[in-house]
Length: 264
Image (tube, rainbow, N blue to C red; front, side, top):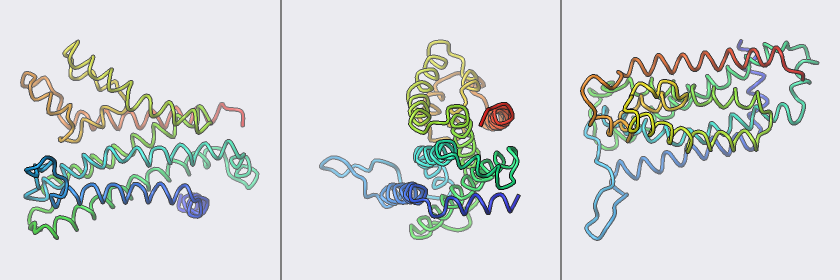
């Protein structure tokens, strides 16, 4: 396992697109959150603050993980590019020639997205920790609301797993990215609105691969809208977490079957 991950890392560490997109995610999220945390984002002549300033680390994790969930799409695109390049430049065949099995090649990609999910979560934690300490927050509240970081990890793994599976089936970066963006930003938004407001069935978004993870983060606008629904009609976070893990397992199984049946 460590050897597979080591080889995968050697393939990516000098890849300019990999470094640029990781840096883009890190810089944009940092600048955006720091601007919010220190009240630099204001509107109007009176200087109205766009977001309330967190008074504890619980508020930091709520806000920061919510914002990070939007910037994760940058890394999701990276997952597509990294995987489709293997097929477009035939390096997948070279791995087999060098002695890998198809399953080893497949598992190396999954190890990469697991590590990428962990790294994203760790970076978010460090960003929140530093900004919180600079802002004068007490370490006694450090782990209050810390489950949001766990939710962020599974959200990343869900998005990356979805992108990885999509790229295994389509094998073309442009097509995969186009479908990913269209589905995640438009199709699921429309389907979620129909399920929630037309059919008034909140658990219906269990069937939406990405939306079930979005619902884990409390600052999500759709969660605030759900507060207007009758008590008990909105699923608990643990239910969304279980469904998210179910989707991740399904991505793995679908991709594994595709790898076993596909003609390289």
